[in-house]
Image (cartoon, rainbow, N blue to C red):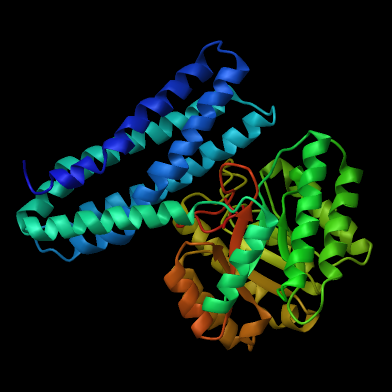
Length: 440
């Protein structure tokens, strides 16, 4: 047994999940009952959240920085593996999104299989490269004691990532989490009830009442009533008028909380077909004199047009990179192009015109390069740190969140809650909810 065998064993659970995901692909291809397909989807979603994503994030935060400094390890190999982890994050987000749509009865077997096939192919390649290439190079550079220490740190980091992904089940638990963030780190929170693509009237009403209750509890705790809402969770699929009424209930509940901290309801942006309906919902609330924010995706080419009229009003826009893939005609292709579009949109949102109109920019990204660039633009344009915000997922890039808070910036953690099994968010490297197409 070599010193690096313990590191190889950390991949055992990842490898076992490949078969699990492949079984789902087979079920989507054959004529299995809907309930069987849904059960297989749920198992895959659990695997992605509880096993694959935490481990790969631990690799990025512990393993790759450690081996990159070793002279005998190929830096180009490390860069490729890190990029694969980010791409696996994005592909997992797509599969989780497919699961939510499938559960709501909006299914596209061919598209789901395509996303799953791409995920499995990349995961197999990543496992092979780490085990056959990287660990051999690492074993030649480090002694057994150092390898064991690295093994323990990876285990701990994976456990912490898994715990960070756990979702508080109730509004009370989410508010308690928000209180701890405020007291211990001076970081705000935005609560989000996990639910999307809902057509059942009882589930819609449950989501609305839970979010209204979250607003009340946040206000009672002396915190800003800052919540996020998926339009498809409050009736958009079945009844646009009901959706407006439900959104109004939530916005009024937030506005009724004590002033002093920002009370805000932000509409999430979902897939491309829902951009226009969500913009109409935002306009309908504004016409009623109700202040609500909206999420826009830098990935979409149309966002440059969509944001321009909003810059002239005292509204809030949360900018994310976006996770919902589309055609080259409709979206910027590749992470470099998306990041460039994000930065261009940030410049518009931080213009003097926007500041004078009372516009509030919210930048939902874990990309530290973008964060630094946005800070520089804001300073050049004369924006006080309390007039714009950075938003990140709870438990992700905590170091960056704390640094920004210590520098006097408004930082908000996106805290999902509720009984749903996966957090609908922009993942690290994706930058927005992809989550909060969100995200984050």
